[in-house]
Image (cartoon, rainbow, N blue to C red; front, side):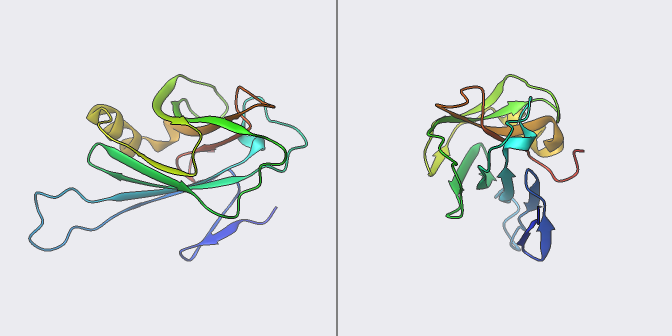
Length: 152
């Protein structure tokens, strides 16, 4: 299936893009904001969710120990009712424990006071983390995306 164009790059479904923000002159003490864009799909789940056309694109921003997110308007639930979403720790093709609990499913929100070591690990090794969205039809997860394009 065709990828999604975003900021001049083509993104394949189930993939992500990470861009570091820039610091303004004279803002040496203020951390830069990091943007992560992921398109979660059923084919990335372990095992893959067969026959589903669900897709959710998350735009996440990390600044300090806060992660904010929102789900883009072009989502497809394909009959699923999401109830929770998390960032888990595991490489592509494996399931792993929750690293950041995004809570009950919401179209947008912010999670503050995330452990700084967890944030640093996500930023240093995004291929070891994935976004997972859980639903009534597939409680273990109906869409998933690693936090970087370069994980496969």
